[in-house]
Image (cartoon, rainbow, N blue to C red; front, side):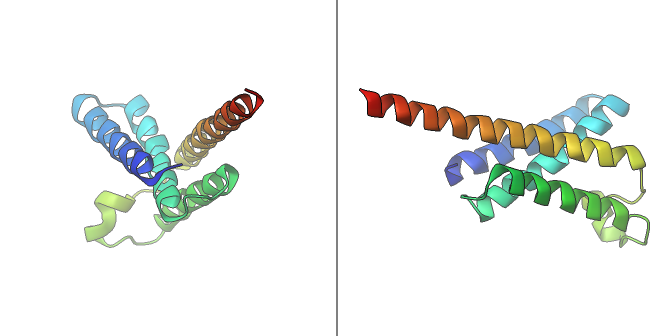
Length: 124
């Protein structure tokens, strides 16, 4: 995936998270935010490693999200709490996995469409 497109995707993900939190409140927005948090990590992984396989990016993004969530069982410095959170919440783990799975599916689907397009051009 080209880096400019990945960077734009990251910006859209962050904007969606910020706008949803500014306009709405409640569990739906909170858990959507969890999924978006993992999607943002997925995009950062792609920026750092543009040729990474989708399943690897999904595993890394879910793993980092889970690591951060479990770190909340300890003491997160107050300055980092806006970014990393402060309270462990077990349902968040599910939503991180959902966010990683959605990114994996979208990324893998985009790659397969790209391959199909290349195969179709070769046949012409």
